[in-house]
Length: 516
Image 1: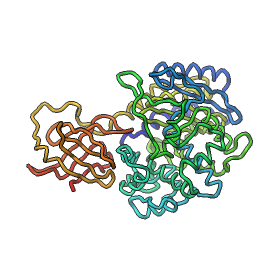
Image 2: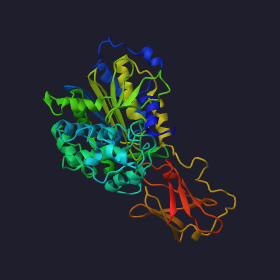
Image 3: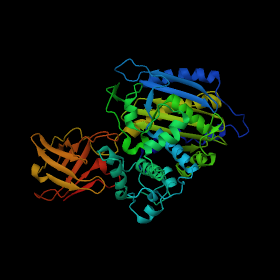
Image 4: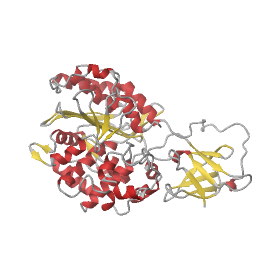
């Protein structure tokens, strides 16, 4: 199995526990523990310590019980090149923490009778199709929201990265080859998740952004929350995403996640998120007022598919609900959680303890290094066992480092062209148009400086650098890019290249572009 973003988190302990953890876990009859002033004071020190160790520029943190906010503070700065401080009302991009918000929105529509969890997506998303007609006909909102579609992990994300818009990204789902059988395996997929949410919004006759505002943000009084990137950018009190370069956190390219808004495009303050967590603890009610039907919201919290490794039966089970990671952390101790991460500068985490009746949410403005997860898990340890059980920062830091490493071009150091004389054809050998159903047409063109690769619907040019023989490299764009990607032309003798494999697009064997 390839090392994916989700497996990085699951393997690092977001949900999985070692066999010994069962022996340490408190029995079901243990008294319910809730945060005290001592715990909240320790949390304050913990946040300061994690920020010092990681250098993360800014954070905002909330701890809540069903009826009140126990803790709400901002730390650090909104951007490293200015003095503006983070406070409880500073707005952050939520990244994949958007997912449980989105399924909360859809739970509202389910409770209103507008849609059902088991409604086929194609019923209200006319241009939607999977590669197999029977899956197209049968796949439901529930299937996509719990990632059991058969689509490969994160497949389709790169279509967004090279500039395609929302409708075209969803339309190209039909060109993605399934990785597993329908409804048999879990594989995290942003595009499929978004398609289900768009289908629900269409059934309500509204845009996703409008229905999120009307059904969730406004009824809860989440004054700064939005699912529109333009609203986030317009906020005066907002953060900027940071990346680490040469050991320093700097403002980098800012992510616009509108094409996959339900999966990663929400933004909110810690104050907003505190209200939403209270709603989860209240099973759809806030301040004794029912806003969501409890039975509709409860569906999001039930395990729908296993995410933990089946070959390790002594490990604590982990599952995915509808937009939530679900795990039990030992006998009768359920947790609902989710992390969010943009490599371009966002890292977020939420944990909800329904039996203990409290929750914690941590927002940050840096590329993921495990800081929010460390704070969440350490705080849970303090409340539930009285001490921090392990070095969570080391564990999560290692997982995110693996997640950030490129998964392509690993057989050589492509940053260093080979010193040997290459067996290279003339530039005209490679020039031409090449096609791929999923990623669209590309062009290889000759410029005064050499060859360039044109990608995307409004083609953007990327220089090609010769490596060896018929292999070139280029730097991919966007959220999922890491190092240089090989570009491997196929040709025979002095003939023009007939095809090209771009490693960056080839994780699922769909990175072959054919001349035509």
